[in-house]
Image (tube, rainbow, N blue to C red; front, side, top):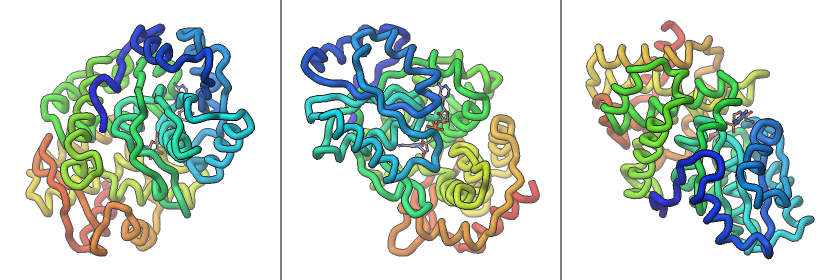
Amino acid sequence: MTNPSSYLFAGSGSKDFKEYLKSKDLTKNKVFILVDSNTKKCCLDKLISDFTELQNADTVLIRSGEQYKTLETCQTIWKNLTENYAERSDLMINLGGGVVTDIGGFAASVYKRGIPFCNVPTSLLGMIDASVGGKTGVDFMGLKNTIGLFAPAEKTFIDIDYLQTLPREQLNSGYSELLKIALVASKPLWEELQSFEYRDIVSKPDIIYAAVMLKDTIVKQDPREKNIRKVLNFGHTIGHAIESYSIAHGKNPLLHGDAVAIGMICETWISNKVCGLPETIMQEIIDMIIASSGKYKLNIEKAEVLRMIRNDKKNSSSKINFTLLNGIGDACIDQHFSEELIFEALSYYFYL
Ligand SMILES: NC(=O)c1ccc[n+]([C@@H]2O[C@H](COP(=O)([O-])OP(=O)(O)OC[C@H]3O[C@@H](n4cnc5c(N)ncnc54)[C@H](O)[C@@H]3O)[C@@H](O)[C@H]2O)c1
């Protein structure tokens, strides 16, 4: 589904990305650059000055934030493409964080049964996670990523200079997914993450590269998430429900990675109860997550969160499906246990 050459790591004016754009014959074909209000302000000029062949591209603007990752926003994109006579030979470039790459990939894949797209992720979360692995989609009826499809980008171009303008809280949010990939797949990466101050990640291209390759290796073995890819869902069963709850109820909804951080803490605690994850390792993991994401005051109605968990698309045969940890770098998929334990895990977080 993907191959290593789908991911281009480089800075300004990358030769490989130039080659890719050249292959698109931009004298004949149009380019649409999808941005949100922030990436329009902070990233669009850089992309166009790095790749002057894009200077005549059309810009498609959407509002920023998870609450706009919806079918309504897709309609804005499709309307824009239609009014500008987009054709199947044209190209869409998704320039932004995970919201832009998720919605842009989905909108491009179904427009006229699919126009090619590539990703230029600009947030940490976008670089190491959302733009890797071909999952695209939108939220629906307040539930995360309910409508979507597997549709890999033709290329994902990763230039960590974009992180220079990323707000601190967004960096922290992305860092949670970096911790996750280490927790489920690589003890050496986890140890490396412990060796520096997390904010310095903006100058650690090697770590970002390692995280992308770890995820890509997992995705290649199981593109449709039938087995091993499920390890990447660690923290997300509870995390997605908390994120959906907070979008439905909060004026300042939790960021994706922050909800995942809460989910990972709860699911680490459950791992101790269900998989025998040793207490000392549990504490090490929780301390590390809190060091970058902080601790949130959880103001939730547990029963409603549980209803959302029951609606999670990862469930099967009416069973809630969890990925837990046996140890660091050692995840176990398809775990089921009583709903009581989910309540207790949320209480554990509450009183931490
Ligand atoms: N497809 C997948 O496999 C996958 C995996 C993980 C997460 N996701 C999705 O990713 C989304 C979260 O991604 P995110 O955290 O990047 O959110 P986001 O796209 O909303 O970006 C976060 C914020 O940072 C701004 N921003 C992005 N890059 C910037 C830059 N360089 N300078 C200044 N501002 C910038 C954005 O405008 C936005 O306000 C969620 O919807 C989540 O479901 C998808």
